[in-house]
Image (tube, rainbow, N blue to C red; front, side, top):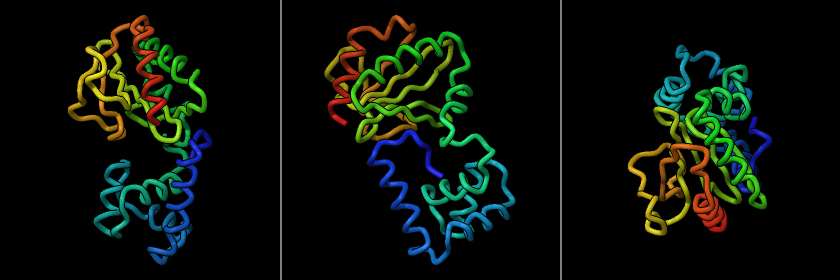
Length: 190
């Protein structure tokens, strides 16, 4: 079941993945859920690999099935639980909260959570943040990296490929007018 905090575009995407599941695989969601419960693996990534190797079901569909088969496990349809689990360090939590306040003032912004990062979207994702060592936060933005000296091109991030710039934030005070301006520019691109 998809989370309640989705953009209209994300809601349509979830509906299309669900609708095409039976049509393209010949099995209903109920049948796939029953299959998922037979998986010998216990970790999410291992289950995804098992689905692909054993049944040819790829990540998006497999994740949707696993979310229904194992709803008690931490899943991105429970954003508050994911946020609590991710942002445990006091310093990084303060930075996240400052970012969240800034992002959520933008019209139509929607917050979503994953195990490894928290993201903000409008039509598409425009920003994401993840804690890094020693109470710092990596902020990814959907803007060109060359528009501000504090930005760099991401090397390897797990969030959307639309986020083409990133910056390291060391304090909640680092969410200043420059960062708020960059968030707004990224929001405008979404």
